[in-house]
Length: 393
Image (cartoon, rainbow, N blue to C red; front, side):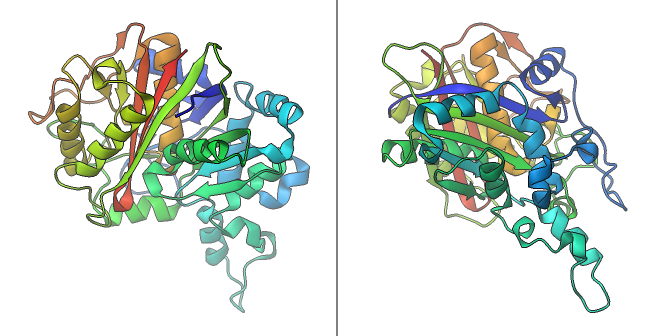
């Protein structure tokens, strides 16, 4: 594929706002997880909650879009020069030549939950929540497009946990097809009752901080996050961080379980490597999907061991942030880009007893060294798999 330059990138998670907050916490092995204090009757679990979100405000002109998810989107957009990079591209290409491709899983369904809780005597939404634009899966994309005064193609991807990884692939195709010259990609997902109680009903939520790839792991910790990256065709000979490859696959195996031999995961990783034109041995860091559920980690470890040499440093960072669902793809792409930019290869938090099914690639401890390529895996419900390869030119 034609490499895409990354003009700016950022994430806001339970670790804080922006890249430095993420990198500092990864280096210090400081988790953002805390006991669940979300909602009226909190589940007995741990969550990754973004501090200060309740007091964050949208610009006055975008007030009709107000909801927890769009507030987090706006907060994340303020970090690390993302808006400045978008403004530069608008001057260079025009607002109608910049695509907006964003991922989520539940979008602003938290506002919809509140509206149903407050139905009036005639079963109508309360006046302050009678805003149809907030109660759609495309609320995130619509808000960002309007807030940044962009006018290009706008897509919201909702394939659960792979959503904001697949946005890189979709943006690459839009640019290759000549429908855009650049793209703002990213994802936002926020805590809400549907997420917490829905995953709990699937018996996937742990009462303890998650322990990815630990022999005694028993489920995930949910989190919320937002992140963005600005992509543009790379000029010949220019240096910097780039998107080099993507691979997508579908297990077509089960609604909520991956293929037992990880065939879809392997296919996505092989496709990303092939599109990047590199061998598996050239990848220096792999951010695993690593949810800390018993089945998913075993299958991903098996798939990684089938493709990569023992020298690979692979880890799950969900012990830092929790599983941020539709935002996991962009957040963990940011961690992969930090590994490339700063040589910081995170290990795994909270885990101490490796599952004997882990291959030698799964690392619990941090490492620091320069690498040439980093990969990120994101796998969603229904076998929606996506792997991304980033490199330094």
